[in-house]
Length: 168
Image 1: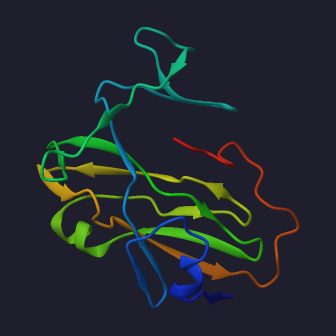
Image 2: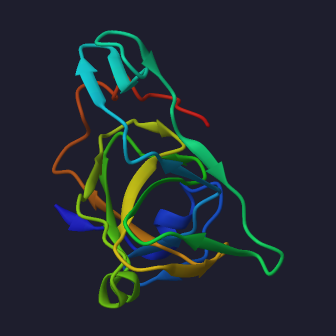
């Protein structure tokens, strides 16, 4: 396995902010707030948030967040946000990883998970951040870095799971 160069990673991205030696920085194309009273539901192909008062009805409870007049997102303290990124297409011989940008982490924006994009995944990936403090972030600011690892051999078959070709 080896890390793919940033310039090669850039070729699989619909858009990016910056090419790094070992990946590219991505800014969200869409931001949504996840209400704090949401109940997460995961059962097979049914994934999302439960409708208020229901134990089985899954709905999209997220509310879009638009940039302000100065093109900044205003994140509330204690807020949970879904970030949707421009489309990527992971080659069949690679695996992708979305890491938090260290600047955001150093300042207190928390992206706990490291997403794994399986070989052959195509879509507009999402990541979730938590903002313990009020945060003001320009709409074009990169919040994750996409890194590709070249697999020892190509995958036997491309990813064909629940999130293939996701768009939002």
